[in-house]
Image (tube, rainbow, N blue to C red; front, top):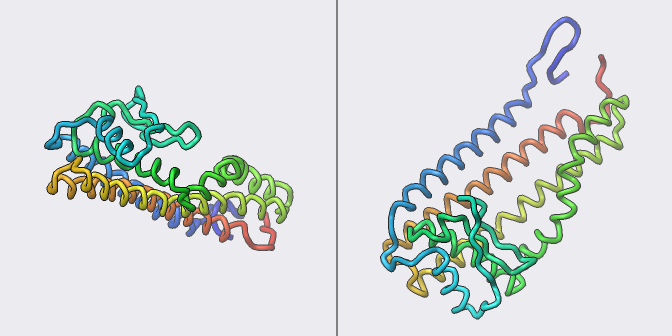
Length: 239
């Protein structure tokens, strides 16, 4: 028995430690990225260019004239959409002239460069998206249904494998994000979009942002381990 109600009392589930570790990792990474981005969002880049101008400059120099740049209404959600070849920047990063704005814009352009060059991990991640969307919605319901139906191992195993797909997706995402950041730093330095001292700040911004993906992947892997420990056996629990 791992935990919950049994007989006349409640028992502590030791696998909750895995959830807590994942939570601490995610909270720590989130605090770091928020702190770092706030710090460098207050530092104006020496050229005084906006994130949108930096993105257009970088994309044009890479010959990616077809990639569009759009401004989002909200102050988050920066991303590159390969379906429409569009870099979408949050309002602050689109219009802002900070080191953060230029760094984030360059990072999203890094994804556009990946797409243009057929970067394999990005293609794999894109192919996994529809499968992962289905798996993430069905994993927990399948496990619970399997438990309710007298520990039906077929349903439980299907649920665990569905959740495993989300972990695989997050692991594939890591090289995609780190590579986009590396490309971004190389290009902002090469094209002089940030000064030499500002490049150091840009690296800190993008490294902090990348760590949120690492923490997310680690948290999901720990949750997968917990599901395997709780439900992966072939035995049935006694009431």
